[in-house]
Length: 260
Image (tube, rainbow, N blue to C red; front, side, top):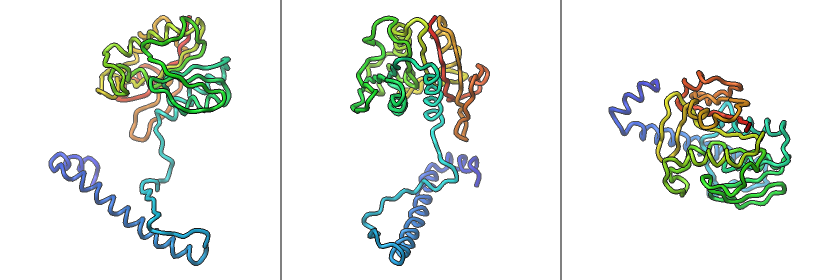
């Protein structure tokens, strides 16, 4: 049965998706049980280092794939930013609320300061972690030469992370980033992008290309790259065009701005 036919039936018979999931789970669990028995038999004859006990089972049922799956948005955009920052080689880098993996990796070769509304409690050399409210940053004007805030601004003011409700929270955050960035400083911002902007409350906002450019109209756009929104997982397009954004429902726009 094709996916389209199944979806049509699912609307007519709402219980079908649950039945399909339950059947798939049963088949996977049955296959796991058979595999467990086979492995136990093989272990008895060839390898006596471990006891293979049913009570110690830890089912992993979704990892049998021909390729390694990944979230294209969250793999490509930190890789994009890290490559540029490595080339610029600032004395230190400040990140506000982006993926923690990004800051921890970046700190291996550049002193990094990571701030979040909900601070991360971790200890690594070359990495400082602190707390900041994006709408009221404590940094001085024109004080940071290398700054990132990636896949963050779209959430601010929607209450998802315990922050207060504010329809203009994203604009306040943008203005704070612009305020603290030093002249000639580099800013890396990442947003969900689409042809027609919308709010998916309380998860995030999705912006048009024109909205982002208008946020930072007084800055120079050094690079725009796009992570495509496709069922296949999303292709990475360096030096992308606005017209590509217009075709997206939930793409990932990577913007490198420099303050004039």
